[in-house]
Image (cartoon, rainbow, N blue to C red; front, side):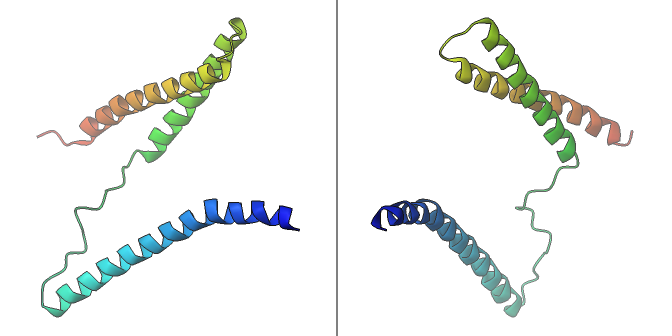
Length: 125
């Protein structure tokens, strides 16, 4: 009985407490922002709903995510192929490094494609 309680409490404290703590932090943060907005409205200050500090969603999220997934897959496959030719003890690390390299290359490709698409969208003056 006592042997099974130790892993259960370990899981609760290692995983559960950080999750609960972060949820409480986000709740307090949202509650504070709400109270601040209510105080501004009560004082007669016009509250603008379009907050410029919030991050705008990109129109090309699907393109970015697709390119990154393809880059990670190609990088992992390249790591597996290279690992099969040179059997070394750092084979798993090589696969990881090649996957990260493929993802990085995909982000660079995404940057250039998105920049080109944004230039094409701007009306000619």
